Image (tube, rainbow, N blue to C red; front, side, top):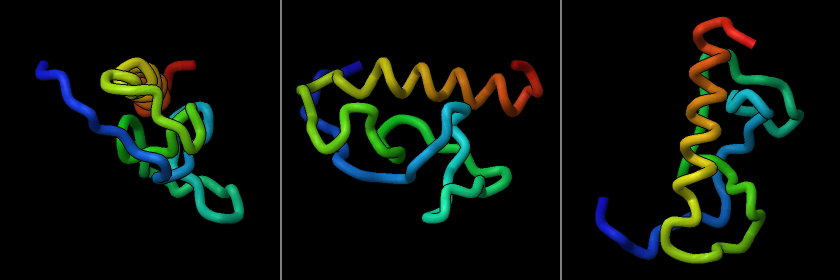
Length: 71
């Protein structure tokens, strides 16, 4: 891992399982988003380098649980 200043201030909105949402909040079946491609939990701010690693790991884990059919 190399430190860098990389983050997003927008992206694909998701539900609490990491499933991608349409503008009307309906789920796009089979599409998940985590990390820098999804809307950040920090809103339209970026705290600094590494600030997206924790949310990426968390949403990736939650998406994997949903894909595997676990609660």
